[in-house]
Image 1 (tube, one colour):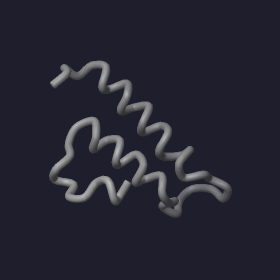
Image 2: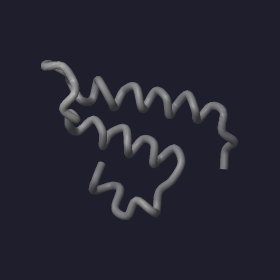
Image 3: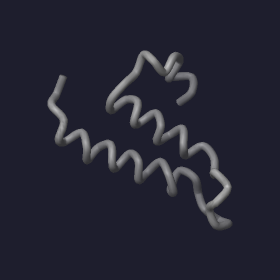
Image 4: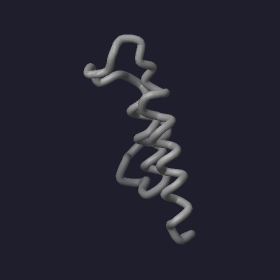
Length: 60
């Protein structure tokens, strides 16, 4: 994801939300219980939220 992002000022909206979802899923922040899988804990819920929010945005 980092290689795809390049300059974060060039992406916005849905694409930026998806970038952040995968970025957060790369590692644990430290407050999670042992055995937590980062992409399950962060990426999946964030992608699902971005998809749900996209339903209510006008297409540009």
